[in-house]
Image (cartoon, rainbow, N blue to C red):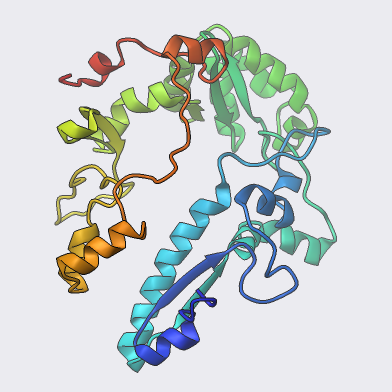
Length: 339
């Protein structure tokens, strides 16, 4: 944008009320400002990788491009703050988001721990820093797992009862949280022996019924078929236009609900260039001739000029090659699709 003369100082001359949002890896100034940014590498530089992983194992990244999600949320918040500023003072501002700094804010407790105690965070896997037991335990079934987290002696006693070993609640090795922390390995063995005989959903529901925090590890299939997600309206069906040859699909809705305003997804995302004419001719006022010039110059279009080849593989072949763990041939029926 700076190279085109469209950075904030120049754009604000055209419209002082402009609110501009920018997002980069390391911000617009500082020693790292010109570094290329990617969430995976930034998880390393802001310290998240250092504390993610199993004890004694290598540092690990946390899921799928963690900082990207933080960036989108922060930009939305920046836009609302910019609107508030403009409403109060009559002029706009520039919101400069550095993804590196976003990651740092998520590690505040570890930063404070170093400042106050000179103590570095460590990799502890699925365990809790000061509560026990907590872990992810294998269950019956194909790749079934359940996370269990006990926060006090009452919950520990409830867990022991569910496992059919109520006497463990008074065992000197486990009678207090400190004792359980010291003997966490032994507790993991006991819990694993119980969870191995039940499905992840039975483990979750049984423990939750007794007041013990527990959650089955959901895969994509579980999320689509989850009764709670459906009850909350989290999954919505949309119909694609015939030319897109996609039929009906399920997509994720919003994580919030409004008491007075019913919300629903209006439809699928637009095709490439679907609204070119609406914007360029409808909003900018270009006539047909000027619009045609843009098309001929390749500035706008509805199809990629140099599409990348797409590997065409059957679902079974994807499984054989390790691209997918598995697939359900009857997925449309299970999701309630009409086609």
